Image 1: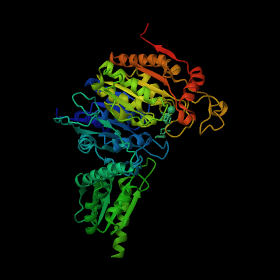
Image 2 (image 1 turned 180 degrees about the horizontal axis):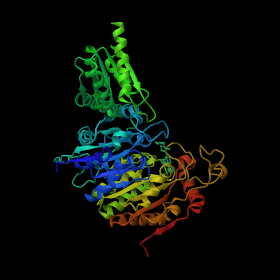
Image 3 (image 1 turned 135 degrees about the vertical axis):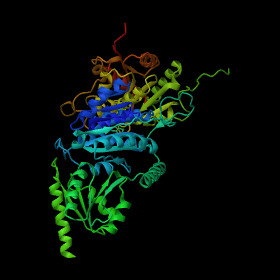
Image 4 (image 1 turned 30 degrees about the vertical axis):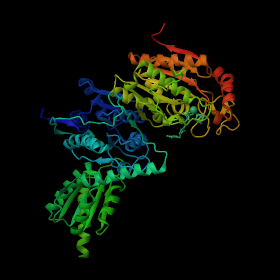
Length: 356
Length: 248
Ligand SMILES: Cc1ncc(C[n+]2csc(CCOP(=O)(O)OP(=O)(O)O)c2C)c(N)n1
Ligand code: SF4
Ligand SMILES: [Mg+2]
């Protein structure tokens, strides 16, 4: 089945998960991700999968932990406050090295915040969220098609590295409708010889666990995790570039904001300004190396996000601040217009001109 | 005489229990292992270990184990059982784990009629963290966080989990037992066996609450602890079958 259809971002995630072989979904309602949950409620019974509405996000992530521990491809989804509740469970998944996919369709915070789109959970997603030295792989789509593609990739990465993967979207992407092509892929279930699914023919029990009472053992486990994270950093950085080669200013932006930034850049280019776009697709691992290379050839960066400035910290670290890093953000569910970003671009470029 | 009087159950490993002298966690482990042996389901069993003194259950049981976060064992068991519907899945949880932080998870596992078995160890205290008050702590019982005794006005009354869960439609079998003497041990084993058999025949949620001693944090000798359980815990937590939905 290779057909193009019109789907909401949230629904595209659901269908893509099914194409990727996910047959277990556990969730709890929260706007603006509910369409995904409702989609799974409809679809899973049709394909003999399991849809379960859990009593809370805490229960949902622990059901994910159990299902992943038993060797299944499994997903949960939520929005910001719900992800906070899942934090302990995600840390357990990371500690026990359980592959699973967690979707966060971000909304405004802190607290109950709003139900409007936001990117204020960047820190939570990329720097941990739960306790302990662990990392989620974090992927940030910017279209409905990419929501589908990156969902499928998420399941593969989760299994490859035995690691939680977070798909980080926002309310706008979740609700927007676009054509999407969901190509059937031959899905070969991976052999998970470590899964706790009953001894069967094995003689040695499989234990899913993150407890190491001896500090030497826990340190060794942490070193093992850190080595894995280094491998992921080497192999899984993803990004997209537009017009960066001769750019004097590079806008760095991800997710929905990158689309607004791109229109702003196109406006600026029509004025003859040399502006490009750098869009991280993997937020962790963050494509730092490439950004550093670009820092050597451009004159400045403008980071734009729906937050008070979170990804900007990674841009500063990556570029070692050898070039100025400017910021423009909106918060609380407000979205910048392309004109607003265009104005910021103009301000920065003109300032540079003055000091030339 | 060279016949073996006591053979270690196949469902237990060779690891010696780390439990304190007089602690009844070990007795309950042994009963569960015997039941699993007798039912012949060791190779299809997945146990869920809690956070509490029995967190190391995965070192003692000789079958697959998933170690869960504090209180969430019934949710973890749900995930496992949905993936492996033909397996035998059980949770082993203390009273802090099940009756306090994990109250919602056990209630909703029961409400869904989740086909799992829960063994609930009620020792009226938080053992592992050194003797703090649990929801099951008795009125006036002294713990490190109720140093003047549990005060009803301030800390409420003991939570009777078996009675509460027996009001839930999805619950198939709910019983409370003790392992304080051979006769009660036999009854405990029968109840636990039934709770596993019902799961294996695809019936609803089953829970067996086991009244258990914690001599260390009760500040007693093992013998005093058994006496205290008999004179104080059993009156508050009467033994018996609270629900047997399909039963006679
Ligand atoms: C989220 C979380 N909160 C608190 C703890 C600390 N903790 C460990 S065991 C425990 C209490 C266990 O008591 P109980 O369930 O009654 O088991 P017992 O040790 O008495 O068998 C607590 C509070 C924890 N590990 N995780
Ligand atoms: S602290 Fe209490 S519950 Fe824990 S092992 Fe010792 S006696 Fe048993
Ligand atoms: Mg206890």
